[in-house]
Length: 425
Image (cartoon, rainbow, N blue to C red):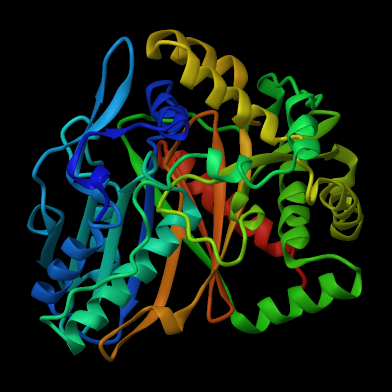
């Protein structure tokens, strides 16, 4: 445990970026994860494991504070007993979704809710975690950490758990510190492409701030193999294929010359293999922009997306936005920095994020195995929209998180089915 974990923690520029997104009603800035288990978990042992993880992620027990000059996290005394609860039900899936849309309060804390949804013979875990603390890659790392602590406590309950992630390693600067002088010069002088958007870029969604929902759609492991095989035969990746299907579906509804899609990118790839960051936000954004007529066929869309993504891979230019956010945040009083953040950081209204693979071998709780798991991002407000995809044992889960009406729910259900319909079978 570092000295930081006993002190007030400084807020990072990424924390503020997500906080502003919540204030501006782009999204609710909370991450969501679900793990379905094949048996009952030990509730008391899970609470002990959560308490141990707080040595690595002390912000879980903090509350967020902002003044005109600065922002920080202050310990509020919350423990696992305040975060973990158990509910019993005969309708596990429905209850899971109910507990996923309950929002914590960053100004009070704690910053995570973990609900054990208990059926007759099995459990499911519904996790809601403040996006200000970490990104999709971060919550995946947290799930692995939680499981590891649970197993180590089960094996040796009296042994101190060491080698946890360093809670001080939260800044975006840990990525910039790995860059050479020429790379940093490229970042600082990058000319970013701009994609102005109008209502023509919006999906026909009404939105309803009072009604958040999360819906999921599945793609089988067998079809995953077919998609991957087809993409490979075209010299593309499965990520390219997912974007191509998304472009095809969007082209049916958007009357624009160009379709621009936001794509979050994990910056941990820039860190040395032996470097372990803390649980934090290390995500950049690239834009996949292709002519709308590319959506006339999946093959045409895949070709266009592949070209765009091949250029974007390894592209340092999008990091200029995060360098400017960091520079503004570190040099200006908070109230001035918050005014500039929206001018620096903007993303297309429509987005897709492929969070990646969840390793089932890292989600075993002392013999209790995970039979399904998925992660999704924040719950969007109209006109912002995003589909999040995770893969578990080759089965893909498409998660759609939105504040909307019952008509929006039905429309999006049809829309995501349409995205999936374009993928090779």
